[in-house]
Image (cartoon, rainbow, N blue to C red; front, side, top):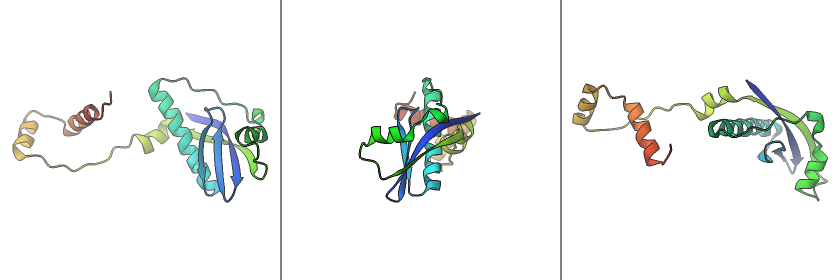
Length: 142
């Protein structure tokens, strides 16, 4: 499902800052508009994915017309009158993005004694599952 949120883009000093006013002033930046947009997508996906994983309430997005970028700029920096500011919608399919970027499995090569390997194979133990469970315990993940 596509999630869309308005974001304020501030262009100043050869880079772009991005603020999501609906999401606790979530912020990111990029050197170019394209990079800032990529970072905004990543930032939005990460925030929404974390909210989903933690069971937190996800705020509803404001209407584009309800966002006043000049007022937000003055609230963030009363002296910020020299930058270009505009609002743009940032959209992302959070589930798809998470599968590609946050939940992607990586292959690991490890070495264990042959006798331990043979014993585990005889019992039909799933090495990946055991390693994941052990790492979660070591890292205090639940």
